[in-house]
Length: 425
Image (tube, rainbow, N blue to C red; front, top):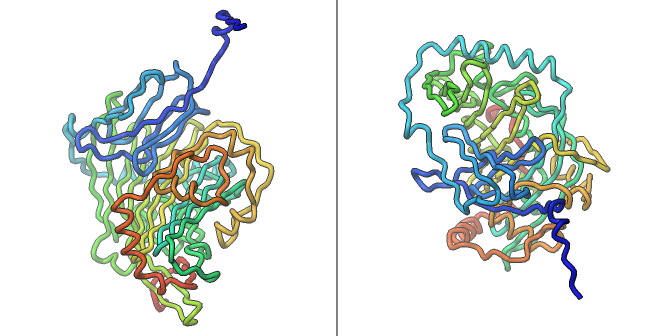
């Protein structure tokens, strides 16, 4: 016998997992790392391919935003599969702005004061690292906390997980650990405005224009546009002069709320950075240049300039490392174990171990197809919400793996380290 209780429907709230992709309405290209916000405890960002997934109620309103695009809002029950983001530059005329020195000065000084006031304030983050090198793809995911005002520092890991996907026939060696024996996690501590330099005391960053450490090495220009809510955004372009070619220098674009003097976003790249690689088999060290691009979004709802999300790509010849970091906001977290990061981030992830309860109760950032395939194929990768399907590699990925495989022997037994300064110094 079947009984129905229609009155109980008034008190039943079921969450649905929604999935969509965010794209540029003008070009059709994915919009990575767009903010998807429901509340301070419910939100996510789009991944590198513009995709996101989020658990929410049918009546929830999702607000999708990214600097330079018009904001979009959708009720969860009516969320389309593809979300079109219209670039602001296509609807508004940009203005060239002269005299950015005063704005930069006020911005840097304000953030220095914030750092002193909020130097002990911490935030919780979800972290993902994907590494591709000849014939092998690696994935690491973790929860961590860090002091988060202006730049990240004093990172502590609470739970982590790692997976490896190898092509059949790839030579396996206990000495081949990909980028597992590196200190490349120091990229998480880099920012356009540094108040605690630590490993980056040899690098020149945009804040040095104001601090006069190496200010004459930059050319600065600025444009302005206005968002639909009336917020005036100054887009400050910072480019290294020819005289900067002998320095490790961070270039890029800062997006600043002009009236409130708030840093909203930074897109940048680093020139002159070297990677030191020690070859165990040949017992020798080589130093090579590395390409590094970074992206940082900031939030201010806690009263200070806080890292909201951060991403970066490191490329060295045929090796690519990509990471993202997502601020978990006001989501309540319960950590059973904590380990401060030392000289090696991935060793710290292994040491802190895997907390299954933490992973099953927390929504995070949707994986790309490559990341999903690594997690699914590697039986040691423990994840309660593991996909039930195996995504086949695309033709582009197959070609890339074939191209990467040629460099395998060069990487056997290598350890890569961020090199502090130029070769020979």
